[in-house]
Image (cartoon, rainbow over all chains, first blue to last red):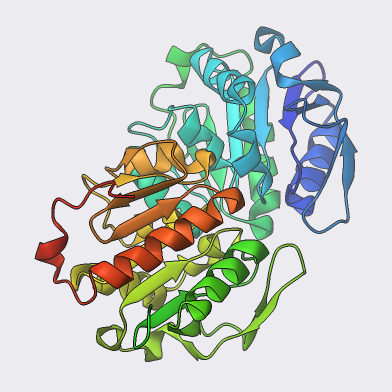
Length: 189
Length: 189
């Protein structure tokens, strides 16, 4: 289904193991090419459950986002670290500007706050962040998956199947949309 | 110095070991009575470094904040959990309303965001939260310790000695201030 699609999956120390692993596998199974992009702080990153260790293919400052179709942000403690790196913030901001699919689960939306791309957007997240997302100008709802244009968000590990399905569907249907094309695509999942 | 002062030290799973331990010891050494207040989720809590385990004396819903002089929030992963409990949010909000000393270090200010007490306040924190604190209406500065009236904040474990000193001084000088008395006391540290 996703032959030819190229996807950036962000990683940093302390990611939620099941979220990184579950989305990586689903996207690969769907035929996409996924590269693991770290901050450059380490060569590989360990999940917060000590169950998954993932080697970074490259770092955020070396990625030309124009060459990719989506950026995925797993949750856990990793997003709090990711937002300390301007290169990771800039990657997400530029991906959004170009209308790429931007998807974040659990604590992943913390990086969306830092990228300042949430004004007027409808999102969900791990509930502890709800107030931070509202303060960043987003409308927060408690749903397994929320899509607002190119932006896809989910709450927690239990939402992974629906999160993956929404990403795959967005990439299948709206491949290489311009950011204008996404306007009005809200909650189609 | 702090004989007769009664202090609430909040705890949840994953606190920054040195921050909870360092402030607890300094306040006890200064003569204060410190009680450990959890969310009620567990009987004891383990720090993120697996070095300190602390037993909760009581839970937030059982504390009459009128009987205390200060609320302290350590950092680490714990504040992200604390803000999931309305009783912990309410405790901080009420402490602030009554002009008690409210002190938070590292990720501790996440709970101040949830308590919605930061409008127009000058604060610091672990730098990943700076944008969340600004979005909550605070003025964020990068300093080891910042005091704005009854509110004391610090950035990280290296700031613990200055954080403790500011708390002790505030409790010594301004014991039982009303919230009005605190107005205008900014950055006296």
